[in-house]
Amino acid sequence: MNRTFKYIFSGLIVLAIFGFAFQLFTDPVSILVSLATIALIGAAIYFLVTRFSGSSAGREQKRAFQKAAKRSKKRFQTKEANASSKRSKIKSLASARKKKDASHLTVIDGKKSRKKNRASF
Image (cartoon, rainbow, N blue to C red; front, side, top):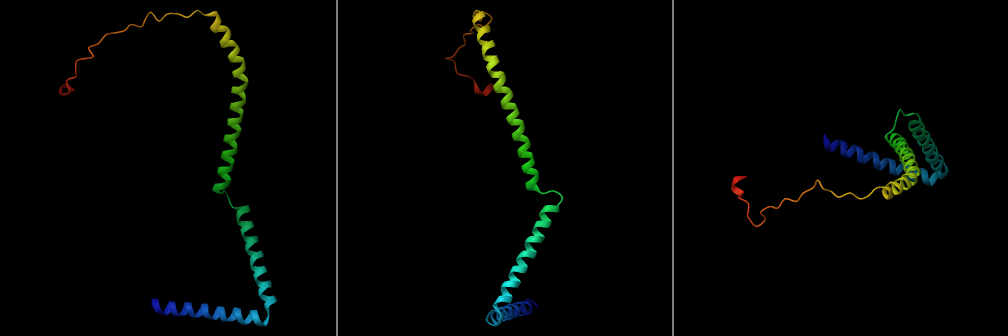
């Protein structure tokens, strides 16, 4: 059964090529008109499908990207405006404070030369 479909399909292709060549020699303008008609109908169908489809992944990604870009831009603008005011405040506070010693931190001397007993872990 597989062979019969192969022969039928190849026969149809040969007939299509023969018909195309015959029409090309007898009436080449009709081939151009039919190809143009097929192209226009295909473009119209493509436009309608893309225009009226419910939601496409590309459109959703584009919206999400634009939304994220707006948020990022807004965040950057507020940080930039706040950064200059914060810098002046930090400089004034830093000059007013005296540097304190960290008296609550102590150094504990350990036995560094002694190797650990790995079996106890």
